Structure formats: C-alpha cells, structure tokens
Amino acid sequence: MKTNLSIIAVTVALIIGPSACSLFQSCPEVSPYFSIEGLETDHMKLTNSSSIGEPITTGEIVEWDKYILHSYFKKSFYASTKFNFGGSMAYALSCIESGYSGSEVGVESLYLIALKDYNLAYQKNDTLNNIINIRDLNDIDEVYSLSTYIGENNSGIQYDSFEIVLTEAPEGRVDLEFELVYILTSGEVFKERTTTISLRN
Image 1 (spheres, rainbow, N blue to C red):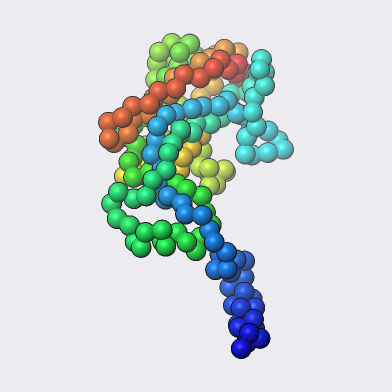
Image 2: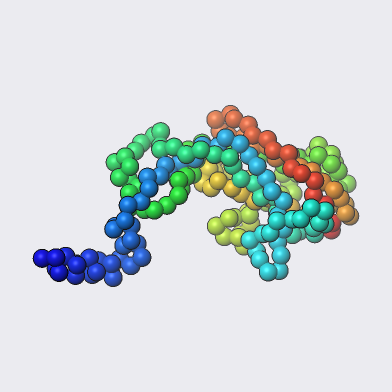
C-alpha cells in the first residue's frame, strides 16, 4: 500500500508540475486585500540596460523623458469585508503574498502638482495632470493615460504601486519638486511631497 501511495504522489507531481508543491506543503495564511495608510515616492530613471527603472543618485541630472516618479502605498492587510469563501482554506493551496486581490476602495482622482516652475506653460503650483501618463507595472512597455488608470481602478485599486512619466519637456535644466495628491472613493486624501530632482530636456 505504501508503494502504491508513493507512485500516486509521484504521478500527481508529474502531471501538475511545479504547482504540486503547494499540495504537499503548508502555506502561511494570507490576507487578500490591502488597506492604504499612506503614500510614498521615489525618483527613478530609465536606462539602456534596464526598462524597469533605477534609483537616481543625489545631485544627478536626468533627461526628462527618462524620468519616472515611482509611487507606492503604505498599507496593511485584511480579509475581505464583503465575503469570505471558506475562511483560511480559500488561500491554503497558494503560497502567495498578502494583498494579491488589491484594495476594495478605489481611486477617485490623482493630482501631480509642480512646486517649482516646470516650463512656460506650467508654473509653480500648477497641476501637471495634462502632461503625465501612468506606466503599467505588469507590462513595463505599456503606458496609458491618467483617465484610463483612474477608470480601471475606480471600483478597487489593483496594485500597491504605480509609476508616473512626463509627456512634455521642462524649460531647459530645472530643479523640481512635486506634490502627489491621491484621493480615494472613500474620501480619504493622501499627500506626498517629493525631494528635489534635476531634469533637463
């Protein structure tokens, strides 16, 4: 009988492949949703060697069309407040990270504000929403409009981070600071002021 059970186990492993490991190991219980508690940003840049983005060093001057404002949420995790299929057993067969289902609260609006003069058209305290796009973190070659991002995340935010890119050049070389305002459908408002970044066209 033990031999037969061993044969069955091996057969299942061969059929299912790598996912079979989750059938024979205990995975930690995870909470599928994240709750947004704050907002943070990092200055990043695109390089020839990587399309993911690399950190910008202090004092570095970056070409404006290579610049990325990487934005991410401070968050906590919880189980669904709407429904729960089977409690912890719902997650027992998948060793995945908490927050995989996103946030149950959506984004109402988002604003990127220039805290210093950007160019002749966009001065200090102007909103830059007309000259920004959002980079898709699942497909880093895909960039879409701010309105598309809000539309796709209005009923629930899918991912715990996003990236903003600029579509219009600054005036020559400029030292900039931004304020990012993120408003949830619940009415909560999160603000983050960036450190100074030097951009050139």
